[in-house]
Length: 210
Image (cartoon, rainbow, N blue to C red; front, side):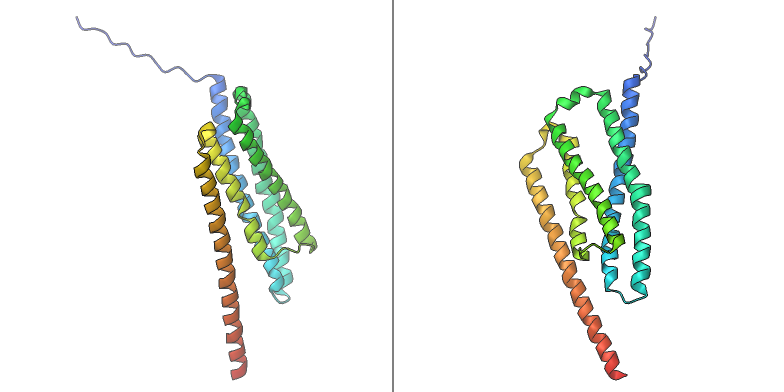
């Protein structure tokens, strides 16, 4: 007589496990929204600062448009993304509070705190730009726009490797990123100056012919 085979149905996940999955899913969604907003916001700062080089009435029109875009981006996308990220992170920790004893989490939270400071500093810069009090150039804002990239890399590496993060490799990676970013900003600045000089020469030549 053949033996009967019994198959056990998979046990449904516990309430805490399901809560963990929901918190993690929306935490990741919040991170994507938050960083997308931060990257684009400071890019708008670049355009806003460079609008001062435009003649009137284009200067006033552009500055008003960038001011409106910055406020909407900061208040409707970036800040809600930050709130969701932080709230879901608190939810994640509530499902496994013992993780608060981990050294890697303490370091990660330090970088998250720096990111929060960056977020609110961007809000302050936005107000200064609206009031015409910002002294930053477009190139300086380009450098500022790279800061969240470094923070993002470190935070993600800590979340993935935890206590096994290779410090030497991570340090060299950060140094390489900083050098590459600084070099790209300088190269772009040289290209802009070269293009501007060429445009000026072409305008002078056209004026001479007329």
